Image (cartoon, rainbow, N blue to C red):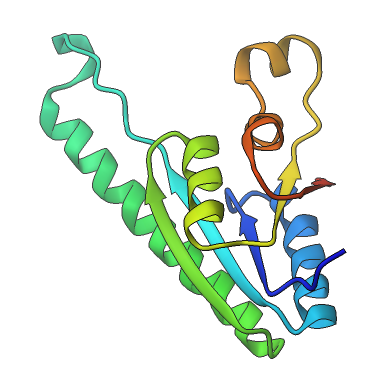
Length: 148
């Protein structure tokens, strides 16, 4: 296996992402690799009609989502910094699995580390699996870590 220089960790800031972050940190330390932490903000879907609120509501929802993502990322990066790991952050917008795979390619990641929620049955059918889509489209190895 080639030397790992850059690890992309995709996070949704949920508890299910924490074990994957821990694994990514361990791998980064073992390989003296850079850790690129990525979070994808999926666009707020606008639903027309007065009963769903006007466009101002959706603009405000996007602003709040962006602010929350920035705050969560800052907190996560500070945590990783304390562990003496070279770390960079990246907030992206779009479809999660597409943005994660694209970031891995453009940033020349040697591997992706992503958590799984462990959904099964109807939940998996309707919610889908970002990790599953990343696995099926990524050009580099993907390590999945089961969440708590």
